[in-house]
Each structure stands twice: as C-alpha cells, then as structure tokens.
Image (tube, rainbow, N blue to C red; front, side, top):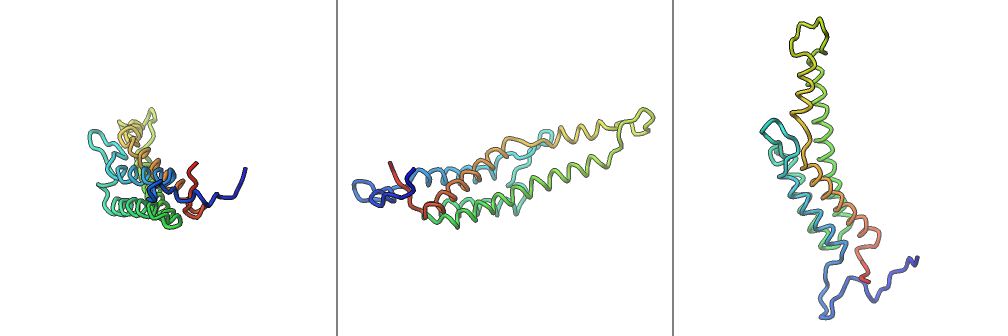
Length: 167
C-alpha cells in the first residue's frame, strides 16, 4: 500500500474550484449531529418517566457545546481540536454511565436479600424492581455512536493532517 498522498487531488477540489467536504468530514458532521441529538434522547427509563441528558443540567450543556465545537472543527479540518471535543463528550458520557450504575448498586445494597425467615416482605424483589425500572434506553446508542464517529473522523484528520484524497 502506498503511504504517499497524491498532492494533485488533496482537499477535494470541485471542477469549479470550490473546496468540498471530504467523506471523512461528512462522517464527523454526522457524528456531531448524532451526539447533539443524543443529548435529547432517553438514556434511562424510570417507569413512565424517561431521563435524558438534557434533564441533567451541566452534562447536557458540556456535551452539546462539545458536539457543536466538534462540527465546527471538522469543517475547518482541525483534527486535534475536534478530537479534544469528542473526548470531552465521551468523558461526560462515561462519567454519567458509571455514576448511574454506582448509584443503582448503592440503591440495591440498601435492601436486604430475600430469605425465608426475612421480616422484610419485599426482600430481593425491590432490587429486581430497581434494575428493571432504571434500565438503559436507546439514547445511549445514539450518543455513543455519534461520539465514536467524531473520534474516527478526528483521528483520520490528525493522521492525514486534515488532507484527504478523493479517489
């Protein structure tokens, strides 16, 4: 495989002289859009009430700003800055995921196990209910796929210096 870039076809120049977005930039923009949409999708379900990132306050603001910044940096072919934006969004998402799972574990540990001589009538049924009620929803998939697309596009831009060959 040839590692050299053909400099005559760099930056995807259209016949009229305008510079178009490359395929990797479209992937990055789609990822930024999916990440921004992921802020408003349900992350956890709680009976009939759904928890979204937007309902949590600061994580939504940080993730939304990171998604918009990543889109801008992808368009400007600033791979390192878009990578940083993607990593910020990923960090906030992982923090929320880990914090929620730790909170669920501490809730289930507060209830005794179901024993035959147990005075607590609900026993382990409460812990099963907590796991069933506070369940991850499809919003995580949208959010994490969007962040993944930002990171893939950013790494490709960092690797090639923001220049992509259209074949």
